[in-house]
Image (cartoon, helix red, strand yellow):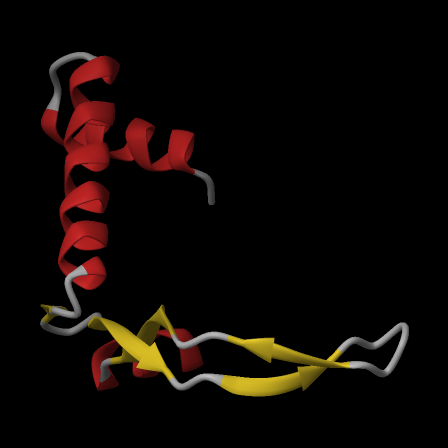
Length: 91
């Protein structure tokens, strides 16, 4: 499923124009991304929890040369599925 498919679903459910449906979806995703960028949590009951977590600095290796590379600490997105979503996906 792609963003255009989501726009089509929202348009079919709610009505209005496809441009309005796309604006709603974009607004939701933007709000979620902003909250996670601040280190916050977006918890959607029955679906899951989205978080912006800090990953510690570490030393990695360049796979081509084998040289060590310093990777700085950075915020990364994390998702933990809720039990309801897991049960739905299992079938």
